[in-house]
Image 1 (cartoon, rainbow, N blue to C red):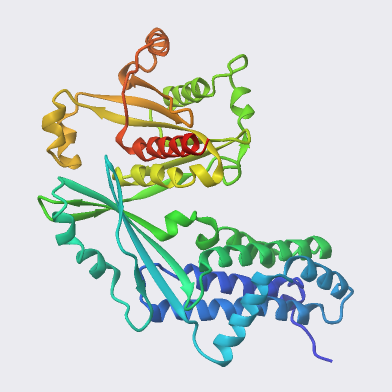
Image 2 (image 1 turned 90 degrees about the vertical axis):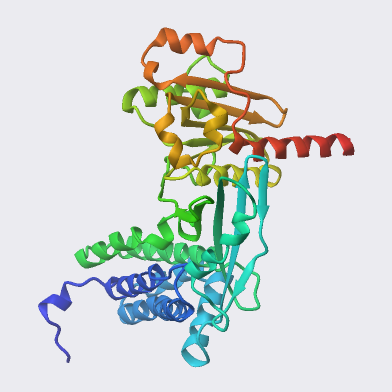
Length: 420
């Protein structure tokens, strides 16, 4: 009979499976949107192989235990579905037939105060791939011809299996979540204490690919400075409120300010308090839906392209997601000589700043817009705050990056009237 070392005997039944899941996700974390096809295909091949080995390892660990029945039950509940079957099929293909047939698509959208322009989509496979930096560089002349001081644009990547229409990212996120749920269920069922498994589970829960929002992984924001013929890529961050990935009741915001049914007013007051406390604020959008739910979206970026993209993305969801209103709050610079400023690049304007403001704006399906502008130097003066809140006049007529949202509400209203 084979004897076990002390180290082996203290390892839990789930440890080998957790290690395989960790190996699978480590391979996927190395997948980079701008990397060449050879590297990315290799990472995907390793992922499929190691992902499938999770259940192989678990079957071996549980072979002569009482937990095989609960293993089959949890497998049936979490792993018998189309996504996991696809993972199994791909694993068999990459091991026995050929490397994964990867296809990459890149979509570039240019943003201006008057709207957006989507360029023809680029499609690449291992046979015709070019370096990402080279691709961006080829856009120089086209951007110069737009005759703008600076051109804001984003590059969005999407990946597919060649010949298929299903987005790989969605499949990967779903498959990873199924496996995580399966492993958690097995851990609860077995109830063992294993330090190594706990350490691996912590590492798995902090893996980049499944934790970072899609747009942070697959979208780059840029500004092209026409005069100097330079590109600047955004440095970005996002903050996730609890429950941000899911809609929460609008009533939650009303509870913070009892007696007020004005959701925009509540949004304004909430962020004024936050700014008073920390003297800074990430640009934040609040999306209100027709079903009485809401969703926050807070972000930060070194260039304003990200703000234009965020509002553009929201505008594209208004019809399909039933969005009834969109709020925005962010800090803005104020200038006296606006005409002169507009002829300068954003990075040149900073030395001409006269003041800084906290700006709030809302637009809704009734085609009503509301706004408030607060001088950040007076943000602790409650009399000043109240005086702004009770003003009847609009403090700002529009924010350029809100135009995509406003225009979409106008389009839907016109469509409704024409059909009505």
